[in-house]
Image (cartoon, rainbow, N blue to C red; front, top):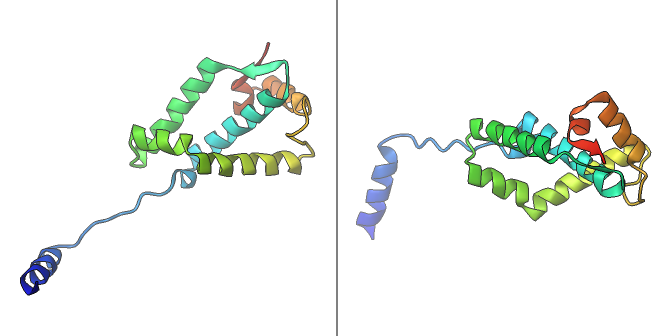
Length: 134
């Protein structure tokens, strides 16, 4: 036992261990803002019968966010796990609901987000680019 303990401590003493923790994906501004934009666009399309997702733009946008995550040290698999994680989705839903409430909208009522969607599409904001009128 003493030999094993001595060996472990000897290995640790050979050099500094560089265990640099990665930031969470929420800490990467481009990913944080991008997921928020996707969340707002999702809320709009879920609550407005004549607005839908622009799938090609959405897929391209998600790949861009994954690129930012990769630059921060995340693998594709880690990024997808984060994006698909139920807990992380609940954080995003909460942020989106808080934002919508702050601008006087209720994401629970059907068609209450249509005007916001039209404005976002007309202004060609990032949220608007993720949507289209059908």
